[in-house]
Length: 360
Image 1 (tube, rainbow, N blue to C red):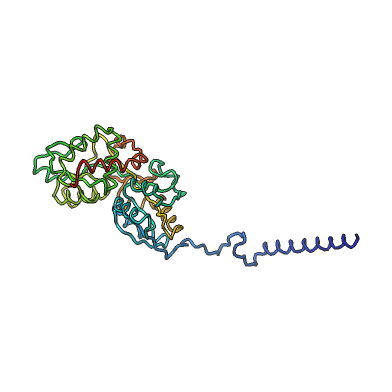
Image 2: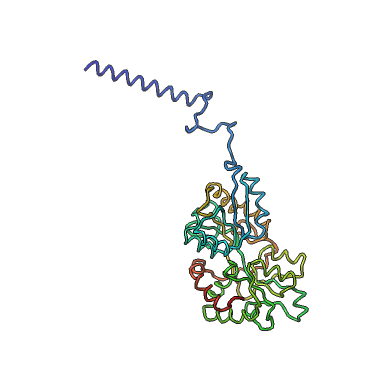
């Protein structure tokens, strides 16, 4: 019994000595910290603030002017950007044809209806950025499959010279646009291809109800010679003097057209359809962590401010001021828009739209 007690005393002394030695080693300022141990940062410790430097992200872009912000992002993070401009309708069709397979990492801007459909098909990665707390929840998917970058109102662009030549005044409301005096003078993109134009169609249906909205679309169609194959085409053709009036997303680029062309922007006085310009990560990405850095930066105050300078828009963050040239927007005219309903009804609406306008 005495031998057992003696052995226990010896073991206790060994453990006590070992514990003291380890404590002294940790507290010794000359001891080199071991990677993986919890240690305090030293003043001369090097912290890598660009952990993904050299990574290249592929970005599908449906946001005019976005490319003007990419250099600032690369300078900040070291992450390189390769980008391709593609309407969200075309991108969605490509995703559906390839069952969600894509080499792209990020979806940037465009029509939120396509994001909703891509989300439901399992093509997007859920990610709630810590910056999303500063974004209006109405602009974002509640589960993080996309977040809002900016608010994009819809309205008209007019060619002042062409209107004057034809003795016409600029339309002030959506109802004005269907006036027979504008026959063959209105240019609008196909809503099956342009997410913004689908948002306009869906927004007017939600605001007016099915009967009134579809009666209006029938009358509007009589003023449209053919439908554009992309959301940017009406702006281009009105600026070139081919049409007097275009139905467009109102962004900095819409206003900038007036710097070199006789065009003006018109916010409708009755109601204003709108959509958030979203951003999301493709499920197929092989660069998920770098993609999260991209999302975080573009939702941050810094990223939002630089993106606003790249293309003037009303940003999703309230702490980023609206551009001066957009101060004329009356937010009380914005449609009370249900984004989920817009996505849910997309196929039904577009099928009826196709039956109405045919192959124009």
